[in-house]
Length: 275
Ligand SMILES: Nc1ncnc2c1ncn2[C@@H]1O[C@H](COP(=O)(O)OP(=O)(O)OP(=O)(O)O)[C@@H](O)[C@H]1O
Ligand SMILES: [Mg+2]
Image (cartoon, rainbow, N blue to C red; front, side, top):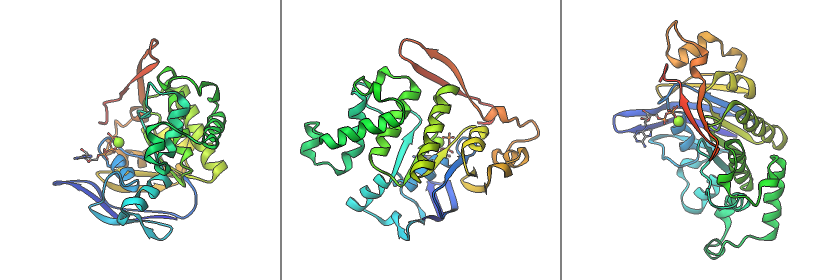
């Protein structure tokens, strides 16, 4: 289905992703782990063509997507929807319009300019929000929702594209544990019920172990582990993170510092121990 061959990305002298190989032959939920700067985001961005590979190929159903341009490239970008840590919603716009923006790729400039959405798409957007348990928030401004709800809006927007693959770059790194769980469960359901592949960069080992069928570990741009969650022992994790005996799994966790009640904005702090 998806095959990554010797994929490399260099920024000047710095090799962010170094001859990475990955083979996905059936819909799967994959967690990518590794310390800060290991190349996780760059790998996802190359898959989605937000960044161009320096070398190597990405084959989807036999077709090299690194070579696509124009309309074919945009079609591929719809097929592999991206979700970000900071949700990337339009804060002042209502939830349902944010979700409808997932159809922008196939709408005319005229329709986009005047915010015209077909009734059929509006119903679909509400159905998707309902599935994610947030339909009642459809008319609210996105900024009025909690972080976990906003991330589910971002997932709904991705689902509007009917993607085959969902790429999630640290989808829960800004969320408190409760919201993080809701968002991971939503991604898991989308994988299981719809048969979509989910590839998520994750900061915590326990999240990768709990929700993913397969875990990929990156270190200095290279894929140094690719296996089942149960194979991800503390020793293997220590190798991936390049840490010594003092390595503690807790140090891979995202800690939430404060919750600003007035805006529901969460300010995360990552543990600095391994960064
Ligand atoms: N646009 C860019 N220009 C120059 N260097 C970059 C760029 N994007 C990433 N890099 C470098 O590539 C390397 C990998 O970065 P990347 O963001 O992929 O890491 P990451 O594993 O996602 O880290 P984090 O956990 O902090 O998100 C880093 O050394 C980074 O500084
Ligand atoms: Mg990153």
